[in-house]
Amino acid sequence: QSILGRLSEKSSGQMAQKFSFSKVFGPETTQKEFFQGCIMQPVKDLLKGQSRLIFTYGLTNSGKTYTFQGTEENIGILPRTLNVLFDSLQERLYTKMNLKPHRSREYLRLS
Image 1: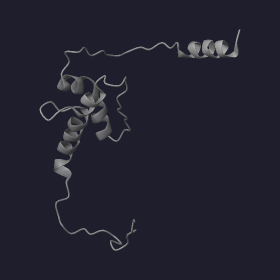
Image 2: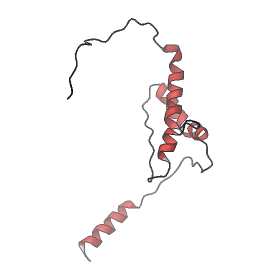
Image 3: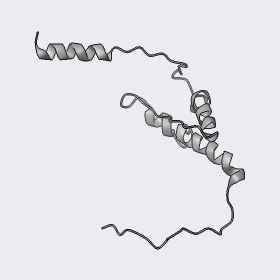
Image 4: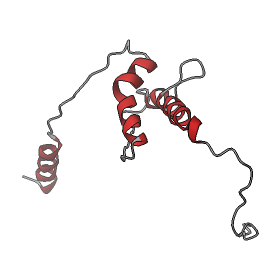
């Protein structure tokens, strides 16, 4: 058997993986339903100080950007998450205008 054949067998053996899913969303799922069912709890956990990571993964043209960004009429994960975060901070915003940057004259000129 050639070395190429042995390598491909080894690679294919490593590719066989078992996945389990806690929830599956069908093609009729709306952006809002997906956000409520999958993203809202990690965002709430983030607001409680826990670390969270949300990312999209899939084939090219499978809808990752649409799911993440959405459209103006039907916003996706990112704008909905930002809305929840900023809405939760409304009572804790610093509204005074008495802050200024420390060492504000330092800069690096780029050419």
